[in-house]
Image (tube, rainbow, N blue to C red):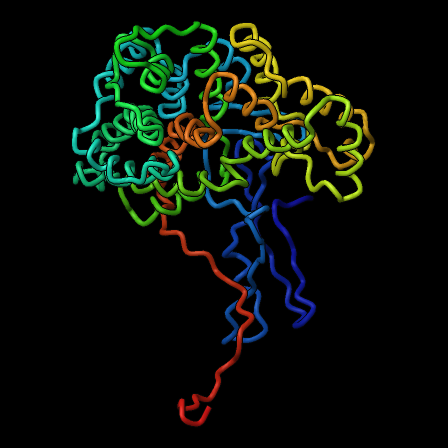
Length: 436
C-alpha cells in the first residue's frame, strides 16, 4: 500500500529516514515536504544537518497562498480561481483589487463603497510636493516612486500594526489610492511640468492618465479605448505568484515593517531590468532590428549567439504561451486604431511569426510573454520608457498588498532568514598587521 511519504537512504551512514509529503489544493502541481524535515539527516550529532541548495528559489515554496495559481506548462493564470481572461474582459482594476484582497468578487454595494473609499484617498499631503521637488530634474520616475512610497509610512505611525484588520485595511486602501498620484507627480517632476491633483469624478485609470498628460488651461480628453486598455494592463500585472518583487514584499513585511516600506522594497526589486524593465528591453531590440525585412537575419543571429537573447520570449514560469500576452496582443490593435500604427508592431508581428515556426525556439519553449507587446502599447499611448516599470508598479500594488495581508494572517509567519551553503575558510589564525 502506498504512503504519502519519501523514504531517504543516507548512503554515508546507511540511515533511513521517512519524510511526509503534504498535499495542498492542487496535489498534482504542488505536493511538498517540509524543508526542516531533511535537517534530521546528519553524519554525526554535531553535524548541522542536510540543506537544500536552490539558487533563485526555483523549486522552493516560501509560503502557502490562496491568491494566484499558475500552471506554466498549460499557460494558466488565475486570481482567486478566476481565469485571467475572464477578469480582464469583464472587470475593472479596482474590482480585481477587491477580489485579490478579499477573496471574492464584490457585489454592487460592496463595489460602490470600495470605489468611493479609494477615490476619497487619492490626494497626497502637500509636503510630498516639496519632497518631489528635492529630486534632480532628470531623476528616474521609478526612483522617485520608491522614495515617496517609503516616506508615506512616516505620515501614518500606526501602520506598523499589521495584525489589526481595520488598521491593515486602511493602509492597504491608502496605498492603492495614492500610488497613481505619486506615479503621475514623479513623471511630471521629471519633465518640469506642474502637478494636477486627482479629480475623483473619473475612473482609476482615467484619473491617472489625466494627472499624467493634462495641460494647464486645456480640458483633458482621452479616448475610452485608451482608458480601458490601461485598466486591463493594470489587471494583467496585478499579481503573479511569488515573483521577485512579491518575494521582497513578503521578506520585508516578515520583519513586521509597515506596508509602505514593504511596497517600497517590492518596487525597488521591480526597478531591475530583469523584472519591471523587460518591456523596455523589447523596444530596444525592435528598434535595433529596424525593419521587417531584417527579422530573419536577427533570428539567425540570436540562434548563433551573435545577437544575444530574444527579448520578450520565454518566461521563468510559463513553458507555453503566457496568457497575458494573448490578451495584450488583441489590445494592441484596438489601441492603434486610436493612436495610429506603431512602426515597431510590424517588426514584432514578423518576429513572433518566424520565431513560432522555428524549431530552435519551439524546442526551447520560447513563446511571447507579457512584455513582448506591453512596451509597444505603452509607447503608443504616450508613455516614455522610464515610466514602464512605474506603470507595472501601479498594477502590481494590489497583488503585493494582498500577499502582505495574507502573510500577516498566516499562523506560520516567521521573519525571513534563508540558510547558506558556506564555502569560505575554516578557522584561521589571526596575524597582526605588522607581521602580514
